[in-house]
Amino acid sequence: MKSPDPVIQKQSFKNESPSLPPAKWWGGFVIDGNPPQRRFVFKWGRILSVILAFILVGYLGLTTALWGYYSIYRKIPGVNWIDVVVLPRFSRVQAAIGDNYLNEAKQFWGKQDYMRGIMTARAAVQKAPDNLDARLFLAGCWYQVGRFEEALKILQGGIQAHAADPKLQKALMEVCLRSAHYDDLIKLLREDLPRKGVRLLSGNNVSFQLAEIQAVLETAGPAEAETVASHYNGLAETPGAAPVLSRIDWELNRRDVALERLRVAREHGKNDPTEPTIQDAYIDMALRLQRTDEARSASQLFLDAYPNVVSAQLRFLETRGSRKGLDQSPWLRECMRFLVQYRQTPAALAQLANLAAAQGWTDLAFLLYQNSLQENLTGFPFAIYYVGSLVKAGDYTAAETIWRELLVRNSAQLASATYLEAMVTWGAGRESEALQIIERLKRETENDKSRRRGLEQAFRSFGFPKLADQLVAAKATVRAGINE
Image 1 (cartoon, helix red, strand yellow):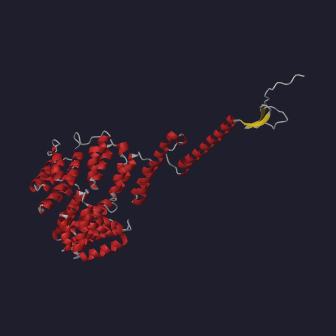
Image 2 (spheres, rainbow, N blue to C red):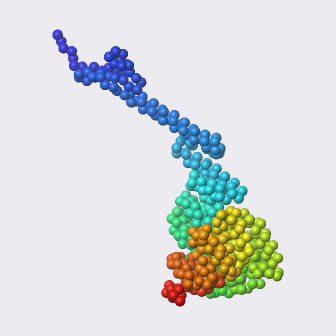
């Protein structure tokens, strides 16, 4: 009898042999091998197809739900279903959300809801970092409330994508100058922007050239600033350059030349867009030289020409700072108009409070401080201005009382006004303690010439020349003063 061939017997999935269980869509048993054995085989093609189908259906379901949340529930315009589904297009959704946040932020800000306006604008920048309009609006909000550091950070974040945009360039320059970030401004103009192919110091960009000169003046001194200015042809004949160049003249002790430069620029720059700046610098220089009548006359013309410009209003108030006799009525009238016009503009009120502190108008400084408490529980920075006005007025007892109250509530924020503490303690008769504060300020400003210059000017303008001298004196002199 012939033996059977040792052929491997396989049972297909369609085999209806009663020895094998019925086949499933995802797999079944087969018989193979020698001796024949039963084993289970998966239909991987079908399994993977079903898994992918479930994933696709789930993904479409989730993205559709997400689209419904944005488009229907939150009613954000510009969110398309295809942009949610196709991942490379999701940046358009982010942009639409950012635009919606920006519109809401503008509405909050228009209603004087400053906190919600700033928070919503921050969300707009976070959702759409490349949205320059959102960055500029948020930076403008921080700028108006006096938070220049925050404004600068927001603007610097836009350099990577928008270095060539004139709006960003101008905003960066203004914030750097206002916040005294002069080293950052020099680096921006000489390194950061040129690295992106933007060279603002070449050609006829007078505003950026003047910004560079001012930054050099604050950091390296008038001699170096004059050298930089000499490299730009025709700058000395430009009326708009007179305010910065006159400052260099003043620092180099050419004071009559400084005033004459501004007087000429004032006469020839009537059609110059920077005329308000020229007018402001001219009045300031006249006041420095104690030409009071000339400053008063110029301030009246300045206010008549620009009745709604903050600097014109403040100069008018400053030149009538006695608030007595013929000065009383115009000062009061213009001050009330300013308060009404800018009652919801923190930056303008802060400038008025700063002037009140410098002039010793304690009543006005106190009014602004009380008004600020409605918007800010701590009252900063208006509390500082109020204390400064008391110091300027010579009321050191009241200044020290207010300072101690502020220390209890806002000790962390007072750290930025250490110079004021030095004036308060000196005025209260604790000279040794004041000199210790000066020594600390000396260490803090060792590598910050601009801040030291500003502190020195503040001490002198508030009537503390000895503190100013100690600040710029050698460390040994300060220690000797403390020992005495």
